[in-house]
Length: 399
Image (tube, rainbow, N blue to C red):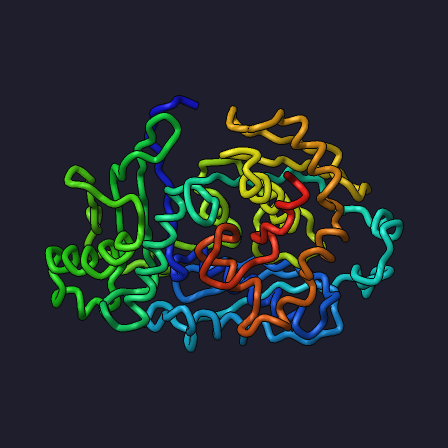
């Protein structure tokens, strides 16, 4: 990568149709695991004008009302428009109960290391974890700022500071880098849909731009070390200030926002969806384990940037490949860091589930656990408590 460059990342609000699908899918996962910690569940969702489609495969003793959960999420997100709302939208389901599997109720916390070694992954996947010292959360600055703006868009709507906003919104931040370091904010973009056709004439474009700058941009950057300058380009609803947004304008699908869920394209990420899967899916939890490793490496001062790549093959418990890339910022060789990871981190599927307590968190965390990850990122979160893979408790053993 060049020393001087421009990089842009985007985020979306929880009302974006893709994120609405992610939240419905993960709310279903939460409900299964809350009632049956050993449930196996894969669920995907699609939304469009006045319709929601849910496809799921599951093995569990729990009874879950898919339709009720979907309507609850739609209501919580704030959709009450005639074309799409929790009461009148049609919900179609395609559900398949999986045959009973052997040792389904096996608790990883009670297994020995030898027993964990005997539990293979059932998917082949390459996952990535990344960390850098650009922000307090150790994620790249562009995606960090884009998430803060998107979250604030939702907050000012929910708190009725800007009551005319609708749930669907998008943010984008471009950062100029000098010598690999964030130097200045090149541009900020906010696209916020408005609530009902009857209110569009009440808020003219100029007033909308002033409101969003004052209530969203100014508030977010008040606490940020790097702030917009006189030359920062700010675009607010520059494309279509009268867009209604939501599923009645563009459809949504689970797992279509992987870059937003991870590192904003600053680093590589797996092509597999993170939402809608129980903890036995290595394509989800492996990404968390890789992030855990990368973050601890950066927190330990071994590198300023670190990408950890884990490759899994069907039938094996351990990754067949562990690769570390520090992009020339490592204090020791990447090969030496890899050895440290192999010695101090458990990347086996059952080991990850045990380390992060992934089966039981939905019952422990009020309001569900996985649904909270479905908007504003699965990594680098400081707003919902410390996630297990965001801990930096491995720093002492990496020194």
